[in-house]
Length: 114
Image (cartoon, rainbow, N blue to C red; front, side):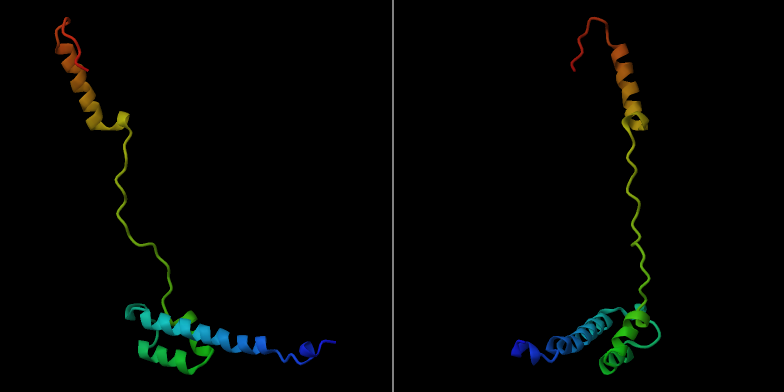
C-alpha cells in the first residue's frame, strides 16, 4: 500500500465543505445587495444582509428561497409593426391602380419609359 495514500485524511472534502458554503454566501450576499428594495420580500434589506452573513449556510439558503421575489416575467415590449404582403397592402394596390390608369390614358403610339 502506498504510504501517501494511507495518510490521506480527506483534505479535498474538507476544502469543499468550506468553499461551497463560502461561495453560496458570497453569491447570496452580492445578490441581496444588488437587488432593488421593491423586489425584497418579508424583511428590510439590511436584515437580509445580516442573516446571510451571520447564519452560515441557512442564511444564504433563506435569501435564495424566500428573500427575493423571483417571479419571472417577460419585459413588456410593443408589438412590432405587422408586415403586409404587397398584394394585401392598400398603398401598394392603390399605386398599381394609379399606374394602370396612367398607362390607359397614354396615347397608343407613345412608348413606355419604363
